[in-house]
Length: 277
Image (cartoon, rainbow, N blue to C red; front, side, top):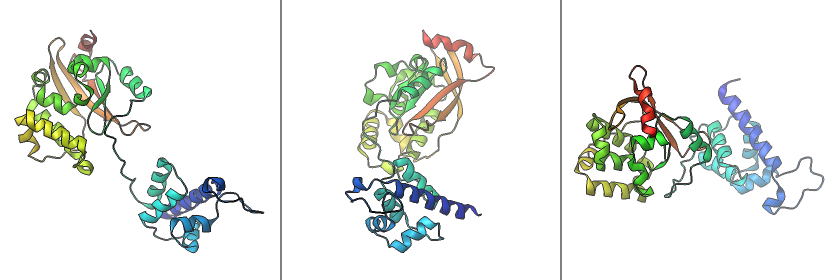
């Protein structure tokens, strides 16, 4: 069995399972007398989704047809699939998941994400929202960047720190390289919300307060996030050499966790407790 055939059969079995498990009362439909199965009939889902009964039957049978994304979205909507189920169905047909609307205000960070950040100590770690707001951090990160404690929530942003905080700039011996990498990585994530109010507000503010930002932003560099070495010159802990790593929690995909792990052979690990003072 080919991978395409396996995907079609799984799609058909999945849709059939969800259809027969649906509660007719939720659709304001009466019970079906002497029906062999409960749930909705194929013709009912077909009608709601705007397709023929024959076509929908073929879909559940795993026939070699090419459903459009619009039809798959309609079927998912009328079967009242969850977000995860909708994305699963799209993947079986070969489509990418639907883009998610990014809220303007960051949601509370789940306790397990904060627990992860705390468990990484003494390595500094923090969590970023899609708008690059720093939503959570551990004590080591606050020791490395104490400005995160004093800054208002709307100003806890790595770009603001890098381009406007003299303390942060003094800690970065490779400031020119780091600042441009940050900008290029940020730009790579903003294509779908280039006109969004949070993005526009951040850019307008940074252009107003930093000529360095304006020059770098106008270079239009784009880079995907990549693990790399980071060096900081901390006023108390001295030179700290890290490997910067990023991960996305499976059950909190709107957050990105960034951790600075001490590089072996640099003495950084022994000096990290100084950040916790």
